[in-house]
Amino acid sequence: MATPEPPNPDSAEPTPHVSNATDNSLRTRLNHIIFGWESPGGKLFDVCLIWAICISVLVLMLESVEWIVRDYEPWLRTAEWTFTLLFTAEYLTRIYCAERRWAYVKSFYGIVDLLSILPSYLAFFIPGANNLLIIRLLRVLRVFRILKLARYLSEANLLMRTMLLARRKIFVFFSSVLVLSVIFGSLMYMVEGPAHGFTSIPKSIYWTIVTITTVGYGDIVPQTILGQVISAAAMLTGYSIIAVPTGILTAELAQEMQRDRHRRHCPGCKRSGHEADAAHCKHCGTELPAPKP
Image 1 (tube, rainbow, N blue to C red):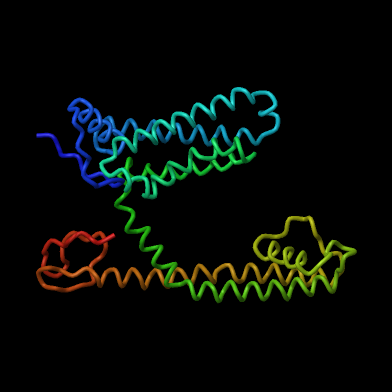
Image 2 (cartoon, rainbow, N blue to C red):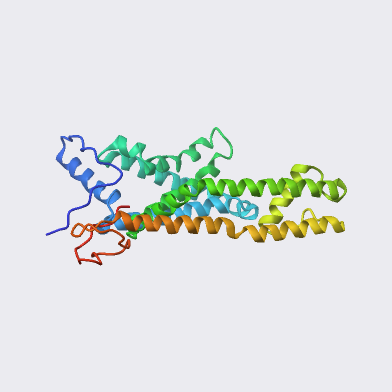
C-alpha cells in the first residue's frame, strides 16, 4: 500500500470544485509534485528548483563584475530573463494547483516567490531594481524539507528563545561598547586631529569601532605616540570584550536547555528532566512523547 502524501505546508484549504475531471487530475498531480516532497517527482522538482535558484543568483552576481558584463552582457541578460520567466510560470502554477490559493499567496514562501520575480519587471520603471533579485536565495530554504532537516527546527527554536531571553543583557553590552567607542573616538579626535585623518568625531568613532572589532582598515592611522597608546588600548579592549556576548548566550542557552528537559514529563511516572533526544524515561522505561519544536 502506498504511503499517503503528507499535508502540504503551504496550503490547507479544500480544493475548489473543478468540473472537468481531467483538469482536476492534472491539478492534483501538479500539487503533489510542486508542493509535495515525499514523492520522487516532488524531490526532483525541488532539487531542480534549487539548482535554478542558485544559478540565477550566480548570474546576478556576475552582472556586477565589470569585465564580465562588458564581454557577456547579452548572455547574462538572456539567462536572467529565462530564469525570471521560468519562476513566473512556476509561481502561477503554484497558485493554480494550491489547495488553499490565498493561504499560499499570503504564506512566507508565497511572498518570497513573488518577490523573487517582481524586481525584473520593476526594472522597467526603476533602474537597478533587478539587483533585488538576490532575494531569490531565500527560496533555497526549501532544502530543509528536501533533506528532511525539519527535525532540527527545535534546535533552531531553542537558539532563538535563548537570544530573546538574553536580549536585555546583550543590549546593555552593546550600549557599553558604544559608550566606549564614543569616548575613544573623541579622544582620538582631540589627540590626532584632522591633520592625521581624524576629520570629525563621527569618523573617529568609526575608526574606534573598526579597531575594536578588527584591527583597523588602514585608511586612518594614528601618528602621535599618545594616539598610538589610545589605539593599543582600544585594540586590547576589543579583545577583552569578545568573550562577553559569548558568555551571555552560553549561560542563557544552558538555562534554556535545562528548562527544556523539565518540560518533558514521563506519561508513566510523571517525572521530568529528560534529554531532548531521549526516547524512553530513564526512571521507569516508559516511551516518551516527542519533544515539541
